[in-house]
Structures are given as structure tokens and as C-alpha cells.
Length: 596
Image 1 (spheres, rainbow, N blue to C red):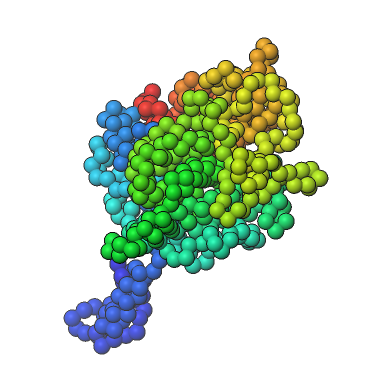
Image 2: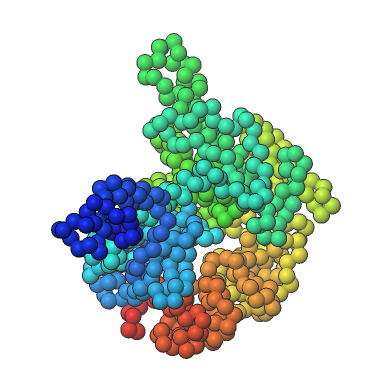
């Protein structure tokens, strides 16, 4: 604890003690009241909201949660394994908070190495005695603009990990309290999504008896969407973008899910119901068809959420995913048909949804998801006899219809009836009719939200990454291949190679010929076998300057990973610390020795 008298001045008023023969005349002892006031001010300072969080730590690893890494505990276990093998490459950094962001800065230059919004911090874990590290702090964060989470591991050699954990959690709580008090509203807030009154819960769900009530979802302002959007007609005739429409549909999907949960809650009343009321109570229980509709909407909600993860603002994506799984778990526990959810095939989950669940779910939620069977774990490209799984068109309890698409002349486009249901807008996959060269359609087209691709696809594209086709409809391509676009679907484009072969390829691995910004799909990774083109893509993705990209982009992956601090300082003196920091994370993730 600091000295509470550090700011006391020796020029204070003279007291009766100054001329005492028991001390030197030059020292003025403070009065009892002065000491009391100093201590009081010091105590108030300690109680003020913390805002000067900055500590010297050693960054050890940054691990993405996926497959066998389900949480911070698993990441600490991986650190223990790598440390025992001598494969941890640490770096001294300053871990601090500036504004509403958690920053990693260089100790000497104070250059920012990485940053994370405080609102993205999901969890903190302090672990003592991890190999040779006496105190390790694990911070779980939600990645920017992506569906997964990562865990940052720090060796806290100056201040214990437990102390840092408490301080950081306090700051996160303060940030959440500020958001609740003032709101997280942009300068020009968008109108809230339209939600009928009937979709709101009449009362909060019973405490400890079920999940929280699903709040209305808000989206980011239109200025944060890409320019390449389709046009939809909203409930009041207004023009809507793709994410705005999807958020509106998602609100209604969740509203119908909540209605069923409300019925279950009402039927789960007192067990002392009189016999004459038992028959009526049984009639109030949902039917098997209603349970099927709930599970279909749960899958559709996951597809919508994954598809619009970066556009959903309030509640955040992780919060909404947690609420959906609370709702799903509650219904699974009360459903009288034990294996009904496993039998619900349509809609099949999109690859984006599968990736989101694989990398984001908590261990308990992941076990629930695993118990639901193949129809919840395979995309259309992976599911057996996928052609026999019908396209999913949602219907709503109050007859609400999703907004129709507007054509170039702003005329609404509606589809016909589906089966015996009331007219429901078909979600077209293209703006124009294009002859189908292959039998069938690209995987996932039946399960995707109702969004459309740009009307004029580029005629020539280049493959940013290698892709291995998994069935006769998909075309295998190598990185750098130039392809001709024949047809553009939602996520899969029909292309022709120079050899005349045709097939579908994911659009997020393609870029127009001559385009320098690359794709916005999965982030490029750095490994020992990376080519100079892949190294360049990795450097661009990390946000380095064109000069740094030009200087280091001529190297292969092994050459770059073997560079030392002195070499980096000579090649890119402006950003060598950031490069070194990113390389240390890449090397640790690959399990490379620091001396390789």
C-alpha cells in the first residue's frame, strides 16, 4: 500500500509540537486532525472507480477456442504441455486499460501491440504454479468480427494473477454498468426493430426455473454494413438492408420460441392441481408438431445468428447465443418425446453456424449440442441424402410474413405458397434466372437466410486459398488459380478452371482479379510452409503498413518465423515490435521452439 502522507507538505501550519524540545525545530509534526483528514482522503481515493489499470506481465500464448480447447482451463493445460517441452516464446508487455479497451503495449516504446474492447472480455482465470510459471492469468475474449473466442495467457511475475483478475473483472463490471446506465447508442441511433406486442413476454420467466426472457435484438447502424447489400421492404414500407431484415426475422423467430416456453411454464404449475382441471391442463401442453416447429426455429435462429454475428449489437452475439441455448435446454428437459429434436432435419445448419458453435459454446452447452445428433452437426454438403431434406420456410404463429425483396425498380418480389401453408415469401438465391450447369445446388442454399448476392459477379476471380472439393459438385482449386465465374450463389459460386472443369467453390476464398484487399472470409494463417503470397495475406490481415508488407511479404513462412528481434528491427524499424509480438503468438500456436 502506498504512503498516505506522500503528498503532505512540510510547510503546513506550525503547531504546538514544532518548538518542542523533543524534536528538531525544522520538522513540523502534523496535528491529529491533519493526519485524520489525510487518511480520510486516502481512503476515498482507494474507493474511487479504478481507471489506472496497467501492469508489467509476460505474454505467453494466445489460443483460439476450437476442437479440444473448450475453455480457459484447457488452454492452461496446453500451456503446461508446451512449457514442459520448452516451446513457449514469451514477451514482456504492459497489460493496461485505456478508455474502454484492454491494451497490450510494448514495455519500452509503449507502442500498442493488440487491443480488445472491455465488453469482449468473457472470463478471467487465475492459476498458480503452471510449470515454471508461478502465477498465470487467462483472459477469454470474443474476437472482433468473428464468431470464435480466444484465450490470452499471461505470466504475472510482479503482481499475482489473482490480484489482476479481481482488478480486471472490476473494470469489466464498471463498463457493463456504464452500458446499462447510458446505453451503447451511436450518434444517430437506428429505429429499434419492429416487434409486435404479442411477442413480448408478459412477465419474466420464473427464477431458477428456466432461461431469461429473450430481449429485442438491435443491429448496428447501416453505416457499418457493407455497400453490397440487397434491398427489402420493411413492415412500414421502409427500405431495409440484409442485416436489418435478418434481425427482424430473428426477433420473430425468437418470439415464437418464447411463446412455447411460456406455455410450458404455465403448465408447470402446482402439482396439486384438482383432478377436474387435469384434462384442461393436458390440452394446454404443446403438441408434437409445435415441438417440431420450436426445434426448427431454434436451428434457423442459429443460422441467422451465425450469418449476422458481426451486425448484432444489443444483446451481443455471445449473449444471444447463450439465451438461445438456455431456451433450447429448457424445452429439451420438458419435451415428452425424448428423441424428437434429433429427428428434426430441416433446416440443416450452415457451415458458419457449425463453426460458431464449435468455437464459442461453453462446455455444458457443447454437451447439449452433441446430444442432438447428426442433423444438428452436419451441413448440407456433409449430410447423407441431403437432396431429400426440404427447404425450410418459416411460418409464424400470428401469420407474420418476412419482408419481401425489392427489385431494381423497387417492386416487391414474393414467392408462391409452400405446401398447405399460407403464402410465405420465398427467399430467392439469385436476382436473375441462370441456367444450371450442374444437377443440384450448392451446399447450404436451402438453409441460408434470405439474402441475395450482388447482381453482377466478376467474370474472373483468383483463389486466395487452396480448396479441396468434397463431392462431384465442388471444384478443387489451388491458391492463385484464376477462374471464370459462371454463376453466383449466396455462398458458393459456379466457376470454370482453365482446364475446362466446372464446379462450386466457396465465394469467401475468391477475389476479383486485380483486387488487392482480398477476401473477408476466414483469416489467413501463418505456418512454416506458407508461400510469400500467404505471408503477404497474413501481414495484411494483421493490419501492418504497406511498407512492412512489402518488406516482409517476399519471405516464406519458415523464413519469417525464424527472424529475430534484431533482424526485424533492421527490416521494419517502425513496426518491428508489433511484428515480433504477432510472430511469437504464431510460433507458440505452432508449438515451435523459441530457438528454432
